[in-house]
Length: 391
Image 1 (cartoon, rainbow, N blue to C red):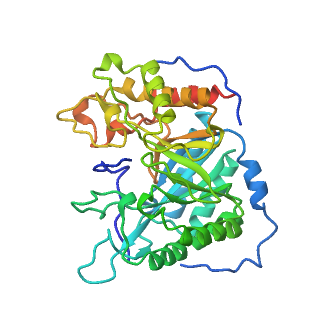
Image 2: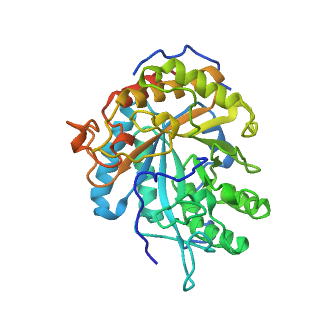
């Protein structure tokens, strides 16, 4: 069953959504199963972990391959990875969507036990070609499946993948594993450095008895470092995985644009990470990756960093909010000795133009999610300055 794709990032209702320190920045700105015997020798999990042990400076890239031919999309990927390298990134997170599927009449995607592919899900073969292009551009690759949120809507949970409640967790994990297996196999075939077994799946973290076999399978099949990426509230990890955290915790106490400075954002973010109100970080600072860093470029964007919505008729883009937020997150990585960060995001489809800018001529021309976009703006300059600051 093919389902429709999602937008850049939902406005998610209620989304509780060892490196020495160097100088801070003061910038204001299904399924292929176990046919592994035919594999050529490729990196082991240990060698993949060694490859990813350096500072991870990444861009999340969300794939929408359904809008063009294979070659059009591969050509666009080549253009995009050249652009990503121009920002001094060393890693790209290839985000691809899989879908909750209702298989019983009257069922709900919130409670369904079935996961499948949809129109925005790339084939493993195509995604493998994209991985190869990223490697040729000098980028490490993280493979990052995300549960599509288009149809995840209910009064109880809003529209967030972290609140799904399958009626049969064993069946859900069996289905989820079946969908991911071909991508794990492809990860080894194309030497992807990292495979993410889950992102923001807060309601599912408690099921260790199902996660552990899945994590072990991912390590065995992919030969890659295996990550789990937690929401910011609560902070949770899975056994045997590296830890990423979606960095969407709001900043409180700032009431005006004049207060939306790099210094204020930095101190507030560091206080948030140090606080144990949402639970202590499950790993040392040196093992923490900020797996998504984003905020809307608008007044008060810092109060709901996960909110991608923007009404061009009522709101104005304030790029400095986003640029300062990006720089502050970079300062946090420096100051606390974190393992890395990934900015959200670029969209990969056949029309990607590395020269295009996300600063509109005027707010009336902005798209509904324009405030979340940042290509060739002061915010992308902040990203570039961040990454280059690590040498």
